[in-house]
Amino acid sequence: MGRTGHVMEHPKIFIPQPIPANALRRLQEIGDVTLFERLDSRITREEVLAAVADQHILFALGDIPYDEAVIAASADLRLIAAMHVSATFVDIAAATRRGVPVTGIPNTLAETTGEFTFALLVSTAWRIPEADRFLRDGRWVQNQSQAILGSRLFGKTVGIVGLGRVGLGVARRCQAMGMKICYNKRSRLSPEEEAELGVEYRELEDLLGESDIVVLATLLTIDTKGLISAERLALMKPDAILINTSRGPVVDEEALEKALVEGRLRGAGLDVYQREIPEPGHGPRPGLLGLPNVVLTPHIGSAARETRAEMADRTVDNIERFLAGERPLDVLNPELYGEAAVQSERIG
Image (cartoon, rainbow, N blue to C red; front, side, top):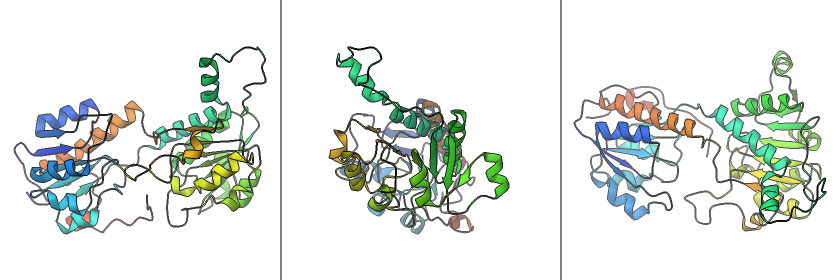
């Protein structure tokens, strides 16, 4: 078939974990699907290497690395289709050397991630998970109790680091709560844009010192790795809250734990961690697990049913176009089609 594609009868398609039902049904209609069906465990590397040997199309998901060895193990590989914006877990260079296109999906997750980030912000400020456990444990014995006091959002200052589409979504929701919005990003907005959006620019250190809640919504790049260091955490107010739904390595997790334990921060809400699947020891630092003032979620910033279904269907769209002999919509190595290579600063 080659990279320009042609119609192929019953391609063999490998999927390393369950995907939304409609996308799976569509794939089963156009090919022979091999699916690892379990949700309570991950497919092993050995199982992946064995499963891909006779497959034509590899459906790629962030839990499962498709490195050079996996790509080499698929003798008749034609396409790798990732349900991911940048497919950083796929060795795109190795695929390109094989002449195999790699597709992603458009970055249409911003509204969902912005909504989730705001939900995490509210849950952390109002101590909702802790209050849930308090009630379930039978400890509710007073009305108007001082036992569980949250922090209201009205009148507070939120500082958003990275005012892209996700950050703007958070800003809109915070404005609806009567909050003041400060932001920091590499390229400052024009005065007209700031006035229209109702936001005020701050240098990072000033933002950290002024904000009651700091929201990290930046990409992970060489410049943002370790951005929130021990020194910068020390600039934050002792009653401030840190929210991170960007990428784990943006924050020095050890320094964050220390600040929380010592009472130099009121709380934190984290959806991302320095170590994530498939790294060994993935998840938050063990010391964070026992802290009542930390809300922890398993990287679910895009895990709305509707959003995941849209992501999966777009991935299938790319596969269908490829099998029809057309250029897929979202090619991550467009040089295979005689186009300019994709340039990105993102490292995660």
